[in-house]
Length: 221
Ligand SMILES: Cc1cc2nc3c(=O)[nH]c(=O)nc-3n(C[C@H](O)[C@H](O)[C@H](O)COP(=O)(O)O)c2cc1C
Image (cartoon, rainbow, N blue to C red):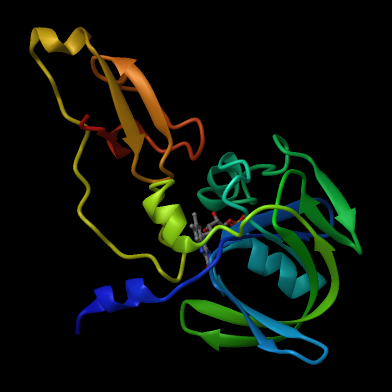
């Protein structure tokens, strides 16, 4: 089976936000679609390991912020590659509570507030069906998953339903006098680009997604 045909499916990119009873939690998803139009129901697919799913199963109410092409890309790094179990993802961005659900502050194409009504078990993921209870208009062109790959050069992590395993090349080791030249390195996890003289330091970690140095590839110019 040629799995690359799946790459032609289209998606948007969203921040899901909810409260775990005490604090705001959330994650990035690309899997959202509208199921019904009257009294709309939407569906999202959430990995069983994601803390956001655990919280939605308790509280039911959650927000969906529609990421725009010019939304702060740090939101994708901050919400998509680490768990709310271990950190406060809203610390750097702030949030506002709308109809009982946290929405991360910043520029987004729009916001939806939803109530989970049905959880359908699909092996590694639950598909959560949810009724729309409120909308907030935003600004900007909604970011597609394709734009995320092509322009931001981001990669989906293991918990994303669309994750595809691929070989990763380690950052080039250089030994010549060229080492002192400035080079650009890109994080293959979230797409963040950093400039450094010679190699990146051994203990370097991505400021966006915290990936270690071996997740960086040199950008050939
Ligand atoms: C581009 C992108 C798309 C993603 N899509 C999904 C998705 O559709 N469903 C999902 O469960 N996780 C998805 N993820 C992964 C979660 O955002 C990630 O596992 C997150 O760390 C979960 O955090 P939590 O434990 O705080 O819920 C995606 C991540 C990225 C960067």
